[in-house]
Image 1 (cartoon, rainbow, N blue to C red):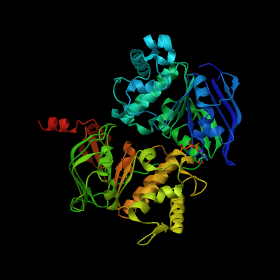
Image 2 (image 1 turned 90 degrees about the horizontal axis):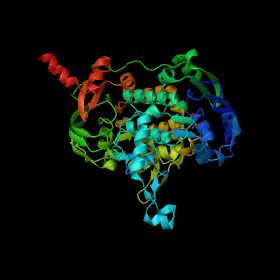
Image 3 (image 1 turned 30 degrees about the vertical axis):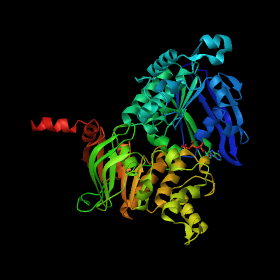
Image 4 (image 1 turned 90 degrees about the vertical axis):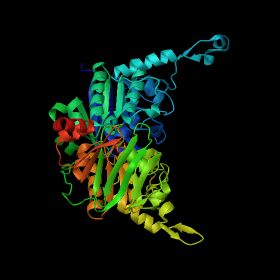
Length: 534
Ligand SMILES: Nc1ncnc2c1ncn2[C@@H]1O[C@H](COP(=O)(O)OP(=O)(O)OP(=O)(O)O)[C@@H](O)[C@H]1O
């Protein structure tokens, strides 16, 4: 790495309606460097990257102050297209892929390669045919660069979530001349194996001279792969430093300005048994693309926190999505011993079973509505709560709505200007907290929670996990927690189900050693036991 910076952002300031969200931020990156951008939810990371990417949300709200230089030359980036032309790429936190298109079609979307034909020779270039062969070849080359072996003709909707991230990266790499690549929490949706593969791929890209800005909440990743780091707190710069001069604990403390630690393993020993079953899956299958569930039998004990873990694409996400009727399910699901109607979300919600989805944008929130409306909307529709409900008409109980929203904002430390703020103007992590409040507004007896801490910082993560624990331990709510992070499952669950190949591979205590979890995730438990007994 030489001394010259490919990117210098100097003294960047940004206000939204008079509210300063970036205050004099500096950030510098050299070619081939991996630079971490850290900060709690709402610290200003995405806003800083929106400035760099020339996003309309910046220009439509009064622009920014300060200066951006690329290879020493001052630039004013006016649009994402301009940013791309300057060689700046962005790998998004939420996937921007079209499920019904093949891998190569997604990779080349809006940048299709064409070839002349008889009509175009007369009528002009816009009548040329698609050069599918070339597009497939380019796709293969870009996938090779990120170290991913995928069938270029496979439909994107069929891919496991983990693979989609690589496709997003390959799409950026395929745009020739990329100098700077921003990764916005790429590992948040990946399991550990996939995440380490992605980090390898990032290193490979840095080795090709691309400067990488890496937004993550996983501090160990910063220690493992980053050269330098910028930390933001409440829109201000805390530090720019070399990663080798610090460690994960120091980074965490600089981010949140206080001591933080994960909860310990804390499942309740021998508190629950099969004598009181609240929910039972019998021969239950779910047809969720990339997350198939195949004929599982599982009993959920009243009041417990049961974890569901396993590698991406093995079916753990299929379980809550099938139970809630969001993907076609078959078999039986019993609640309090009685069969629930399958594939009927409203009826399931009415029974007091609620769901925090892993897909907060699609299923979780109405982005153009306020925080308070998002929180109580389902409860009003399904349970007729937060309403003055008379026989012939009903109207909103604004006082009750405000009380609930304010209480949730306080309990979850949702960083916002107030309960009337539109959800689309909240940072990702704060949106996640609104989703959880929405699930709680239904006053559930059973709560499915899927990837609840995806995309939220370590301070907020502890808060969310502690809240789930409190709901179960103090209020007796049964919780089914699906997560890709084993540590997270171990920190609050009483039992952990490991799913592999759509089936229950094992049910383990959170105190079991790592090796047992590893074997179950790899689906080798049965084979190992057979070996032992032979
Ligand atoms: N369009 C907008 N209008 C008003 N305020 C906004 C808008 N976008 C972001 N904000 C506010 O700016 C602040 C910084 O948000 P930003 O999304 O940059 O945080 P972040 O560090 O990326 O958080 P996260 O880790 O949760 O993604 C937050 O307080 C947020 O509410």
